[in-house]
Length: 272
Ligand code: COA
Ligand code: MG
Image (cartoon, rainbow, N blue to C red; front, top):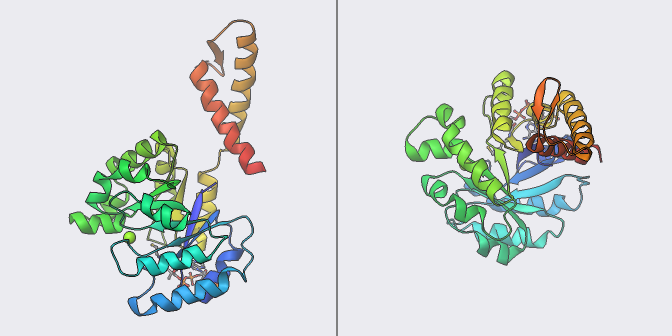
């Protein structure tokens, strides 16, 4: 599950320690934009010393490296390779195949689409070896095209492209961060729109956003109860040679059965 991916500045010991206690499904220790140039090495050293000391429980831990075009990137990858239990590398401003990164560090990868060229290479990026998820950096994207962060933060064209390409290759699309910490309603609305498009979760930056993301990207009680009735009714009908039936006054056929199965699978994965 990647309903919530929490960014934590990798040079901030208090926040790293705090992240262990929070309910985010995944943690992203950020070596990129949350860390000033002069602090990059300190941040790597801090991650190296804390990583094994802390008990991360079931959380998957990522490192967001600096962009592949910077001279920080290979040092970040050295750190990544030295941490056996690290789950993967988030690659910001990715613009071309990242298979070479997987060959170097053998970790799961999550490229971020944050530039026009990244968007134009979306399919190549998603099909790279090791890629399990793809994300979207709306603020950087807005900066690159000269648009506003607000518009690009909810840009349906880009978000649809991400979900469509990701699902074509069995990869998870994760929605972008929402910067206004005082606007939980806005966060919730954006997360609901993302879920409706097919995103599996949302990147978050503050503890208050975590429970909302976890809830919105989980099946609701109504969905689960609908799914159970559809599965039961459909299987019963099918055994009598019927493929189309009525459940709660709506048509149910094979596609609704598949949707119901998907909801129930997600629910059962969460219950484990
Ligand atoms: N990870 C872990 N803990 C966090 C956190 C985060 N991302 N954001 C806030 N917290 C903790 C604080 O340390 C504080 O802990 P405490 O109550 O034990 O002292 C508590 O949650 C409340 O935080 P608050 O005082 O409201 O915020 P802050 O001023 O400490 O931090 C930000 C605000 C924006 C600086 C912080 O949320 C942050 O660094 N977010 C991530 C930024 C980032 O990684 N950006 C890169 C990707 S966009
Ligand atoms: Mg960015």
